[in-house]
Image (cartoon, rainbow, N blue to C red; front, side):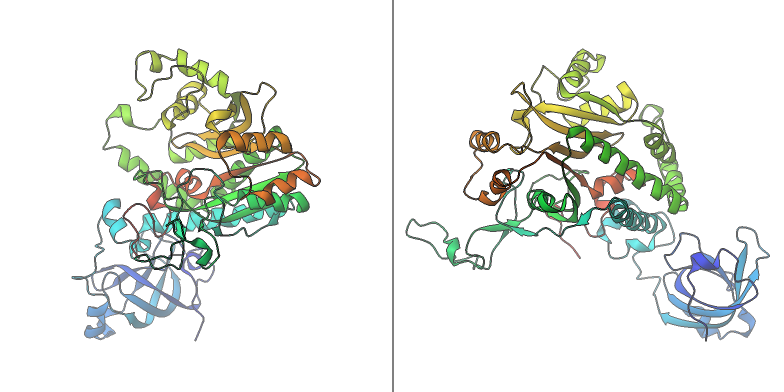
Length: 478
């Protein structure tokens, strides 16, 4: 018996005239004769032609939408339109029955909200097949990009005692009985008796540990799950998501920006080259969706155009100060069209401001640098003006911020001063400070939220649709 061959390979037509074994799930069964079979290797189905006059009627009844079947037959040129080749079945075996009355998915358009409730089955749809094949390709491309540049892949801890962002929105890790944790003499929870002997959390970032690796290996990157206990029920936030965080010794802010721009372009180009069929499918899906919207709300660019646009343009670089002037003087601000009006310098930019700069003003991706120190983290290198830090954020159309990074503060005295100003406990981060005492050097890094990248490349509108099983406030199914 021949080995199973994936449908994507069969559709090339190279195996025409040979006997093949194909397995998959039934997408349609017409006239008791034509099966549309899909195995997830592509959105395209292969047509199986059944000799129904010589097939047991009981077997034919079991060929239903969603059933898993195995087919052995000859690959032949297709007589019908819509496909180059088809399989003339000689043997059909039902691997798994599917009762069409009970199967939650139906052969019709389902809403994304409905499919979120059925996340265990939504992979079977064309939309989610495309999304998760693209997610796989992008993850592979991340490793390929850094590997080609000689970076070391570093696994940073998921359980940590430090809060890298200083945001304090972390999930606690403990073995204590929630009803009666042990208390110390002061009546507080005694974490000395806990599993790790101190209070620990799920990590919000691998950056601080990544810096330790860069101080010996020069160029490292992390790619792993991170967690935020932020009660944000929005289309852009998850409680569990994946982060890509490179850290580079001997890099300044300009080197950092160059690498980030090069990486984004590499990843988008890789997806366009290897998953063009999926991107074309999602582009069409978006066009169909936008037909329901009023003209004013429709995108100026298709998904394919938007991806190409990021490859064709050098990203516009400007300082936060310059951006504030542009925003303050914009008609959008003067006519009070922003939800958050820009009064002046020091304002924390919202997604609407970031998107205005990218989509309306420059009409290309933007890198903003040199933010006020008060709205950025303690580890960012202080500029000569003592007011701004060497931060950089990359802003994309439709998304807003996709990458955040900075040149790190390598000067021991400046770093401790910033930690004091921002109330970051120095005793807990003694190991981080040590890297500034023993052979410190200029270094930089950034973080790319992987789901935000997948959101951009797939054109989806909700971040919960680009991770297999979303974790968000009041959502931890499957």
